[in-house]
Length: 299
Image (tube, rainbow, N blue to C red):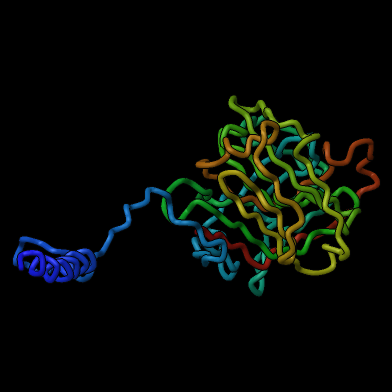
C-alpha cells in the first residue's frame, strides 16, 4: 500500500518540477516583470560631422554704394613692385568694383611702414577688409569659406590677387587664393606663408606654391574663386571645381594658421619678383581688374 501511494506521487512531483523550471517559482507574491529594458551606456564619442551641412553667411560685399567695410591703401608696397596704390584708382559702378591700373610716374611713400619717398612707374588700387575672418574651435565656425567673383586684368606685368593675411605678417599667416600674371590668362597660382617672427616667413615656397592650369581665359570674363579653410586643410576651388587641397604637414604650417583671423585683400600689383628678368618697358600701359562680389561663410 505504501509503495503504491509513493509511485502515484512520483508523476505529480515530476510535473511540479517541470512547471517551476519553465515558469519560475518564487516565494514572493509579486508577479515577475514581463518587460525588461536594458539601457545602453552613454557614449563619449562626438557626433559625426555632416559633410553636407549648410554654410552660414557671415559677411558679403556687393559693391553697390561705398567701400566703408574696407581699408584703402595709399602707398607703395613690397616685393620690388613698381605701382603706387591710391584711392583714385578704385571705381564703383553698377555693382562692380574696378581697380584701374595705368602707367604714371608718381612720388609717394615706400610702403605703409616706411614713409620715405620713392618714385613709382604705375598707379593701381588695393583694398583689405577692416574685419578679420578665419576658423576656430568654436561651435559652428570650424570651417570658413572665402569667395569672390572676379574678372582679372590682362597684359604683361599685371599681378592681380585675391588673398588674405593677418598682422604682424606672417605670424597670423597668409593664404594666396589666387595670384595671376596678366600675360598668362589661362593659369594662376596659390601659395601659403607663415612665420613665428614678424617679416620672417618659415614656409618654403617650393613646397607650397601650386600652379593651376585652366581651359578658360580668366581675363575675358568673371569667374568664381574660393577657399575652404579648416584646421588641417586649405582647398582652392575655381568655378565650383576643386583644383587643389593642401593637407597639413610639417612644411606648410596649416595647423598653425587655425584660430588665426585674417583680412581679405583685393589688389593689382605691377612687376616685381613675380616677373623676374623682365623690363617694365614691355608691360602694358593700362589694365583693369573687376570684382562683382565677395562673400564669407562659416559652419
